[in-house]
Image (cartoon, rainbow, N blue to C red; front, side, top):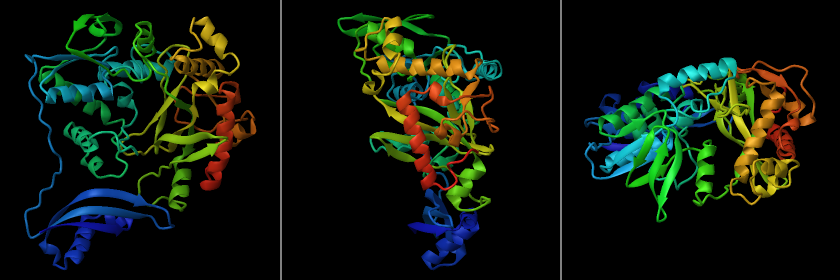
Length: 467
C-alpha cells in the first residue's frame, strides 16, 4: 500500500528517519515494522511563529517493496554523425541545457565558449581576487558554466512559465547534485559542487558526439537573405543548420554586434543596486526568533520587497552563509555577485538589494547623454540601458580605490548619507573602501534604497543595523 502523507514536525524530528517512520505508522495505524519506507516529495520550513516547524510531504509504503530513488535518468543520443548541427554560443547554464536538449533530439551541438574550462579558469579567478586584475575572457562570468558555475545554484522560481522544472532538477541530480534538490522548497546546490557538475555535463556532451570549443570568441555573423548562415570566431568560421545565442547579459560586445547587424534588440527594464551583508547570526535571530539557531535548522534566508515612490525595491539572490565576489568582466569596472557553498557555513549572509530601472529613469540623469555621445551612441539606442550599467560600474570602480576594492558603507550610515568611520569584517576578498555610496549610485536608486532599508528594518526587527 502507498499513501501520500503530510507531516508537521519539529526540526529535530524531521532529521530522524526513525521518528518520521513512527509518525507514518501512526497514520497507517500499523506497527512500525510494517512501514517499508518513505520518499520525501516536498520539504519546507515554517518559521512564522516562535517555534519553527518542518513541513514534510512523503510517499509512504506499507507492506510492499520500497523504491528509494526518484531520479529519472534522461537518455542522450549519439550525434557525431547526426544530419543536423546547431551552434550554441556560450557555455553557461542556458548553453549547456540547450546542448543537452539537442542531444536528446539527436542533433549535434557545437558549443563556442570565449572562456576557459573550469580548471584553467580557477587561476584567473585567483588573480582576480588577489591582485584585482580582470581577464576579459576568463572571469566569474565568462568560462565553462558561465556565471552559473560561481553563483551557487539556487534553483527556485516563482514563475509558472519556466517549462519543465522537474526535468532540470533531474538533470542536475543525474550529473551529481544531491537528491534533496528534488524536494526542497528552495533547492540549492552550492558553489563548491557546481564545477564538478558542470564538468560532468561537458564530458557527456563530448562523449555523445557534441563539440566543445574553449577560447573561441564570436566576433562576427554572416547573414544571407535574412538568415545567419555562419559564425566567425577567433578560432575559425562555423556553419550549422541553426544558431542558439546563450551569451548571458554580460557579453556587451555580442549585443553591439547584433545591433550593428540590424538584428532586432529591445531594451528590457532591469534592476540595479547594492550587495548588503549581515553576520549570519543576525539573520538567524530575526527569522527564527531566537538568540542561537537550532542545530537542525539551516542558516536562515529572507525575501524583502517594498514600493518606494512608485518604484520596486527588493532583495534577490539571497545567500545565507555566503561570500561576495568580484564579477567584473572588463578592466576599470566594478560589480559584485554573491554565492554560497553547499553547507552555507560561512559567517556572513548577503543579498542583492536592488531598484527597478527603465530608460525613462536614466535618460535624464546628469552626464548620461554625454556618456553616450562619447561612444557615438544615440539616446534612442536599444542598448542605452546596457551603457547605463557600464557607466555605473565604471563610477564604482573609480571611487572604490582601484584593484576591485569596493566602495562601502554601514547600513545606517548609508541611510544618513554619512561616510562610515570604520567598516565591519566582510567576506569580499579584494577589500573595502569607505565612501558615501551616493557618490557612485544614481540619485533615484540611492534615495529608493535609503527608504527601502528603513522600511525593511520595521518589518524585520534587527535588520536595520550598522552591523
